[in-house]
Image 1: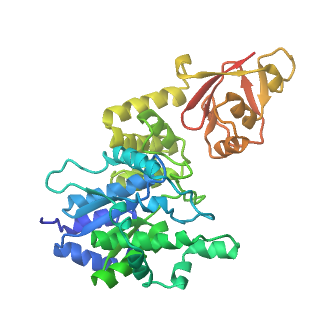
Image 2 (image 1 turned 90 degrees about the vertical axis):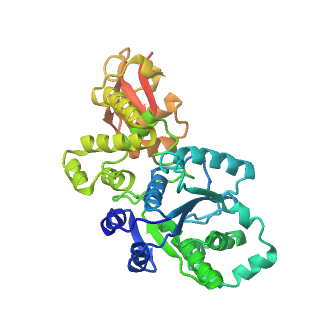
Amino acid sequence: MKTITDKKRLKKIFGRGVVVQILPSKEALFERLIKGDRLRIYTGADPTSSALHLSHAKNYMFLEELRQLGHEVIVLFGDFTARIGDPGDRTEARKQLTEKEVKENVKNWLKQIKPLLNFSDRKNPPKVLYNGKWLSKLSLKEIISLASNFTVQQILERDMFQKRLKDQLPIHLHEFLYPLMQGYDSVAMDVDAELCGTDQTFNALTGRTLVKRLKNKDKFVIVVNLMENPKTGELMSKSKGTGVFLSFPPNEMYGAVMAQPDEMTKVFFVNCTRVPLPEVKTILRKGPKEAKMLVAFEIVKKIYGESAAKKAEERWDKLFSKKDLSDNELQPLRLNKATIIRKGDPSSQIGEIFPVKLITASGAIKSKGEARRIIIQGGFSINGEKCSDPTKLVYVRDGDSIRIGKKKFFRIKIK
């Protein structure tokens, strides 16, 4: 199959800001792409939770652009490696999943990525593969042979292993095998390139070493960003349940984007939309609220279509911008007068309360620690006004509307 070798198009794709590094070099990869070589490129993810988030969406959107150039792309589900558990940036071993849990997660993920890749393309559809197909068949002899390509010192170079050693935390033997198994994926699929996040560079380079030694060819590693908050460095996490998830319905997805800090707006535009970068600069000058509404619309449109995005936008505007919260949109949050601090008339329907106590009183969140996290991250508001200090009393009265997290709405009823 003939590939598209247009230099301007390639520079546009690779120069958007999604890619942070190409190994061994960008020049070497571009030489192959401009030459017209059809490359086999993959991205993999372990189905360790039921939902993907926007940082994953970015990877599949980028992969789709490479597919549209005529290259063979593979979506790999680590159904086997998910049961080992990538040490990643964790200070302890991951919970090992059952085969049933992994299969259910894969089923959900396939639904979530369908809007991002054109699986209906008859000439060059994306391929979906599972690494259990080859990893489950490896014999002990073959695993020992693979392991002989690396030293213990090389594996220990991984940042998290260094951190655990420093903190005197355990490193389990099966975690040593993870980079080896993920690296072998590249050999089994005989790929030319791997697309991965910065947190997976170590594993991807393990695969590059194995491909060189067992296939006698070079594998490119295309490293993309993790969409971290530019101020706090916080990342979305599928295992921790933090972020904007592809499983969210349109209204919730739109609201989840709007609930993100303002500094994430540019990050979303660059990674999860294809709005031209000069236009993004113009949009960002319009102000944080309008810019965020535009990026939320683009993201929901990408997943659910323009009609759903428009409805989600109108609903959010009604609920928060115009503060027009109808009773059928809200659950009642009944507060006893004894739970609030009242000034003046003890019989009044007005008082003050600590936000953590208000959130836990709703029943929406039971943990005080989780309530504090929601407040600090800007996920709590009264009548559309954010309250981000968990130690400061908030003023409440009968009939006030509150939002907790991204999708829980209440109207206060003081009795």
